[in-house]
Amino acid sequence: MTKDKPILVTQSSLPPFEEYCKEIAGIWETRHLTNMGPKHNELEVGLGKYLGVDNVTLYTNGHLALENMLEAYGVTGEIITTPFTFVSTTNAILRSGLMPVFCDVKEDDYTINPEKIEDLITDRTSAILAVHVYGNVCDDDVVSKIAKKHNLKVFYDAAHAFGVRKNGVSVATYGDCSMFSFHATKVFNTVEGGALCYKDGAMKPVLDSYKNFGLDASKDYSVMGGNAKMSEFHAAMGICNLRHLDGEILKRKRVFGIYASAFDGVEGIKVCVPPADVEHNYAYMPVLFTGAFNRDDVFDALAKENVFARKYFYPLTNRTTWFRKNFVTTQPTPVAEFVSDNVLCLPMYAGLSDGDAERIADIVLKSAKHRREVL
Ligand SMILES: *Cc1c(COP(=O)(O)O)cnc(C)c1O
Image 1 (cartoon, rainbow, N blue to C red):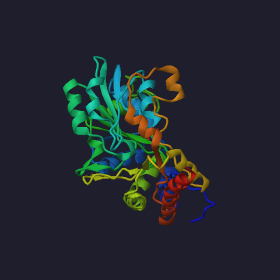
Image 2 (cartoon, rainbow, N blue to C red):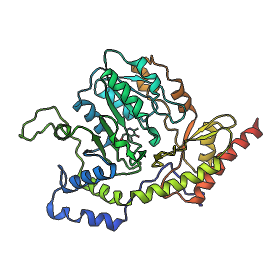
Image 3 (tube, rainbow, N blue to C red):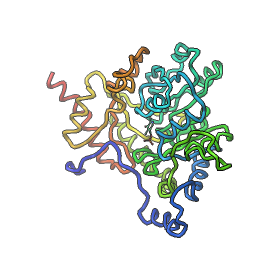
Image 4 (cartoon, rainbow, N blue to C red):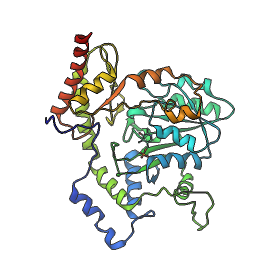
């Protein structure tokens, strides 16, 4: 429990150094560095097995996977989404020339509120892009039923939900297509990377083409693709990290347990406890502060002790300087705003020690008492 070494909100998982070296050694013989090499293909197969899906396409990163997805699936016009997410979700929509229409989130788990979707549907709506924010599972049954009724595609930003299952079913099977991010800060990482998981196997050559300049099987270019390929070195990191993933998630669960029991029953502190039918990945430790606790005060109290929490997700994606400069938000999302103003993500990673988690919880709890003394 050194106070002088800063504790950041996350710390990337890495395999043992020798394991990674062994994994990449063969590359010096094949000289196959990228362009859908053997490591890339092995990781696609491995992820399909782990996530319980037939179709996986790997990408340079999750953001480009989102942009490729929207283009390859031919999404047009308006797309219903939520503003309580990383800015990547909204930017992928806007950069694809589409219009995000913002739906509010649910108070309990901050995912899209399906009851609010139908009011937002117009004759220009072509899809729903919902976010399994913090690994909390969207209400896919209801979302998909609404989509079917209105003939909309269903996409998920599952960047936070790697490995999450509900009733034993992987969330990667939800909707038409789901995006996973393998960024260094995510539960499962390939340094930088991402993937799409999707139902329709016929999309495989289309997606493969979009990520490789539009090159198709006949060596012609039938779509206007870009470059979003995952290299062999990144895939090798993924192959190694996947071997250790279950252990890493268990360690995260232990950290969650320490925080959750420290905060249990404390008024003004709300923790998202996964429902009994969900196998969670404990990707983040979001805590909602109200009453005697003030989010910004908690943040400051932690920073004073060299602990750096993050105001995820603040501002909302429809409240950023860029967004406000370019658009007028017409859809009110009061729940998302409330959560964004009061939530703080505490440090959460597999290597966080019990002692540090206890100390962080302690600082949080004391920050309220201190505030009462001041008042
Ligand atoms: C990380 C993240 C992304 C983007 O993924 P990258 O791999 O970093 O490009 C998109 N959406 C959400 C919700 C994320 O957290």
